[in-house]
Length: 309
Image (cartoon, rainbow, N blue to C red; front, side, top):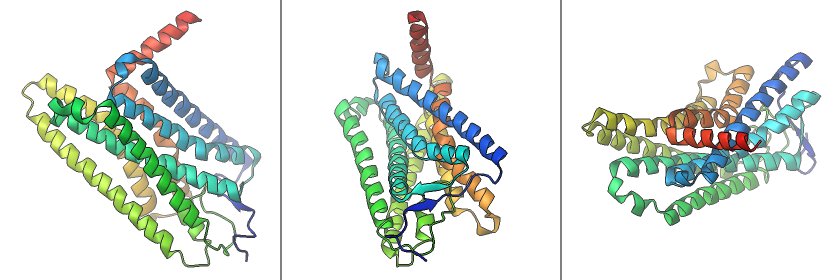
């Protein structure tokens, strides 16, 4: 038995039991993280350097790429370190920092996806008001609101979670520091944290309803476009965003709301890797494959870099 004042470190869940599997997981995580760094880095560079990409959609995409980089850099390096050195330790302050930054970047990413949905809605349903509703000042304010609300959310959850008394050991059933796993170690009432989680779930659900409602309006507007080419172009601008939202929402819902009958430690671990590591690596690929302007900007940027060499 121990309390939070005597805990100096936590024990994270190991990704494997044998040395060979540890090395295999290290290589897989290294490959995924390099893909995420390369993909998101290219998007950030292309949007920042390409003058013709200085539009609301790509401005929010740049912010989303930053949140992707932040989220994967929060959890994966420690998991790779533990897999390589066959250990599971993370310090108390390191766990608190990891929880804060993971919540910060995940919340910011979801908020930005909601804002990007609004951008698509205005672009297709209210094209004549696009420059008025999504001017440079409005875009900056929306992006700042997304990052500020994410910071506040992460700060409240982290401060409240680590203010609890912990007396159920220090072993976490997750490969990174997660709120539900820390709450399992608590020996005091955590109703306040449950209240914060309930509020967060309501806000997430509200954003989800907004996204669904927006896409219903978008689909209705697109179907009213007389030309087939126009309908195809309108749908093509929405498909990447819809795919990214579906990937994120489905993995998170399955991770936290799957039936207990199919729950197992190995499945829980696989699903947690799926929703925390895979989306940041796949998002750049999804956007770059469907967006011709972004592909052209990436091609020009790579051509210029090769010519300079």
